[in-house]
Length: 295
Length: 258
Image (cartoon, rainbow over all chains, first blue to last red; front, side, top):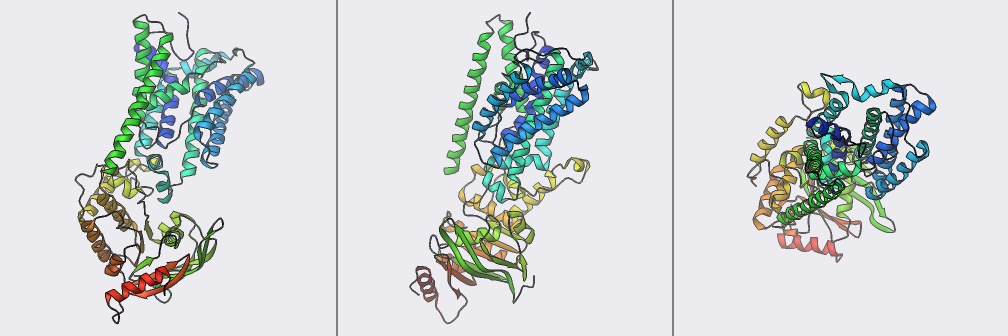
């Protein structure tokens, strides 16, 4: 059985499914928060791939120790996010344009530092990052679950995270209510990229290799999950729990293709169709809400 | 009750605001006296909304000074205005359609939990809901359920939410920009009654409206702006004038016939 994408495990069982969605789950919480505030980051997958390669570069080409390489990589992820966040939030440029361009640029850097090949040759203890077992569960899964829970709790209960709902609902009014809108939005983009860096590190650890193609599908998958999970493209709605269910749904669809021995290439078509359907439903719900306003 | 300079709780001196080449306000002197309901009138483009946005911190003036309770103050952002105790209801209400009544009241100023959630800065949802629901009982416009999102509310209900929010936080001054604009006769009446009652709890209310009828019903005094400048003020309690005469005076000042 070949590993088709570095992101998905080829096994059918629940464990395999958890593995498959764990990488995306690490980013999903932060991405949900960003969507709630009305933003989105299409470059998250590229950041994942780049940081996955970068941590390898630091360890193999530069010779840094594992902890130092990890720390610097996460920092780089945060910097990438804050640059995009600054351009979007303070310079008022459309997030679509910025993160699309960001995707293009960051992905190119993967080839610049990776040379187009996959990077290998890490210290064997690096694999422990993802495979270290607590109660017989690999750390990567535990970490992913922790990320989901922490972001869900923060988004629901934390005074500052909750402000994202106001920002997404009516950004101008949020500003008038004293919320530091620009700062919050910048932080959201920084968080997403930082989590993407962490996810990239875990991914490289899991396969003990940094793939040039890593991360190419993730932005699409995570954003689809966020929208399926109930977040509106307009902002002001969404929950991490919903996003998680979106990831599960997509994993189930993938497993269904395997189980029914259908051509796996059609899986991408299926996911794309699900995304379009989810967006259509979202837009219609938006229309319904505005109609009620007028009556 | 606060002591202002000569009984003025809020005052501006020579406020000028430009939007590019457009002079929105020119050397405007403005004062809100302690305990009064002040009407701010003027035709479209006179500068009323601009002036109150400067007082609320939504925009900053190009030049001029603001005095609050006799002291010179710097209002650069909405928070500065809140801290002084000034609350503003904007013409579009600045409500959040996707949030319910309680959350709209507490946006940006949520109570933090005092219990174990304190270290994570959790919101004290229970306390906020209790305070919000007790406020609702004091407002005559009713809401069937607290969980209802604002987007499903009628114009009158939305106005009630906006007014409740300003009364909840406004300890000193409340500014209302066209509070009766989108309302019918009955609802307007309720809002005006609410304004008359609210002055007992705050130090001053500024009311912007096009409806001179409404202004004459509640205001103690009226300041008129015309083309960005102060055209004059009229004392509504002036016993020597009849209501019609007052109305006529105001219209003349707005249009510049005076």
